[in-house]
Image (cartoon, rainbow, N blue to C red):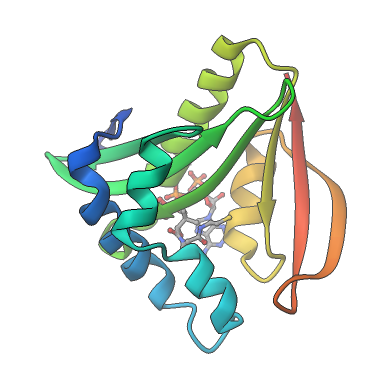
Length: 161
Ligand SMILES: CC(C)(COP(=O)(O)OP(=O)(O)OC[C@H]1O[C@@H](n2cnc3c(N)ncnc32)[C@H](O)[C@@H]1OP(=O)(O)O)[C@@H](O)C(=O)NCCC(=O)NCCS
């Protein structure tokens, strides 16, 4: 944990942010090309139209900004009394500045306010930084799916509230 970090401002995303969010996903996943299956990367880099569809129903999308500029995004949904947190990404120029952690904490606080009993996340074990981030927030591995998404393994992690 670093001591001096600018705190990102985290807020519900508006419809006008869809294109900027899509651009951020594209930049954030680009560095994984060649390391993760291209089909997984394609799934994690939606077009602006798909992000707009999330914003229009079924999901809560939060953006983090630093000095007024978009720095990160995360999505929450609430299936059957739980909270699923997914689609987290941080602008590569803002990595390791605490934005991912702040967004994950925000999503957990949102889940608590919703009164759910569990928060779920998924990560591929190849992304050790992601798994480590969730572990440090209290998530525990609860399942491993082999070759789940297009040949990539997936670790399911849960945080009971
Ligand atoms: C994963 C991601 C969202 C992290 O965002 P970030 O803002 O860089 O993360 P933070 O600066 O908040 O770091 C949070 C924690 O991650 C862990 N971490 C970060 N980089 C790490 C590294 N290289 N090795 C090990 N742990 C690391 C640490 O536990 C860190 O904790 P700290 O606050 O004590 O330093 C970002 O790297 C990203 O957008 N990656 C591409 C998309 C992606 O993988 N999304 C996740 C899908 S499940």
